[in-house]
Image (cartoon, rainbow, N blue to C red; front, side, top):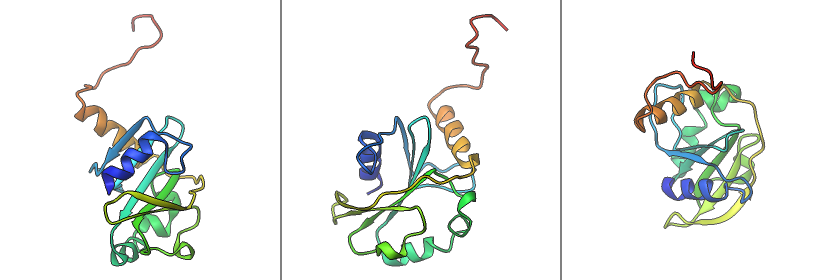
Length: 148
């Protein structure tokens, strides 16, 4: 389901209007939070939590990042869950919900996520980890056209 959510996020965004250029699936970093899916369109970031059981959703609600949203990652936060696992009334404020069938395919958009402020620490950790893993070595990127 994580890969399916990532494909949708990259192609069109979970709301169908906001494609993300860069998307990572289950990337573990030294940041404070590890997302099932994380993406950025260059202006904002999106966190997607994939839920396949009600118990997993209930456990997720106890995370420090859920209790203190500003400390969490993602300007847009979504649950991508199997049908019926999460009731719309149970969603945290500003979170979106997409339901999927047993094969992981998107079935319906329940609620669109709203923009929220978040700490950038986890997103910076993810971007640095992606660059390192993709072979972009630490360096000075000089875009001034003059040598330093």
